Image 1 (cartoon, rainbow, N blue to C red):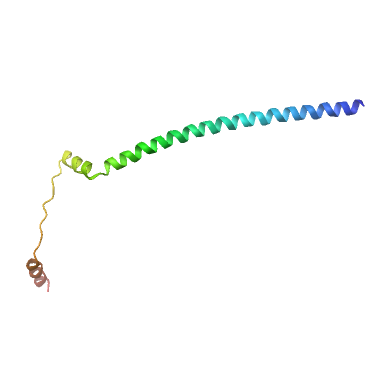
Image 2 (tube, one colour):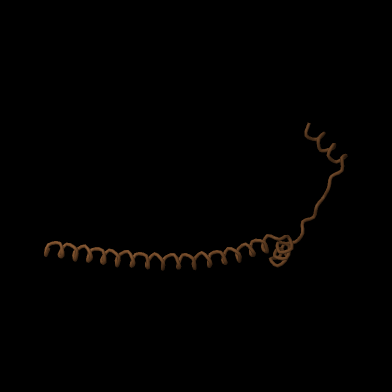
Length: 93
């Protein structure tokens, strides 16, 4: 009888210790999940800001405005008539 009582006490001690270990692991994992959730929210907000900047900086009006600020001037475009193209071809041959 004494032996059975001792075995039951040891089993209870092992079960209590394992419950304590698992509870600690779950609490730690819960903290990690919460931290990852916060990090995900921060990253999502940062992505929204970056996407807004990409759209703003890639707009034609921004590019034109920035080019003027750094001293660029519009290019002068020249078009060639069909006769000028024909003349140029005769020079190549």
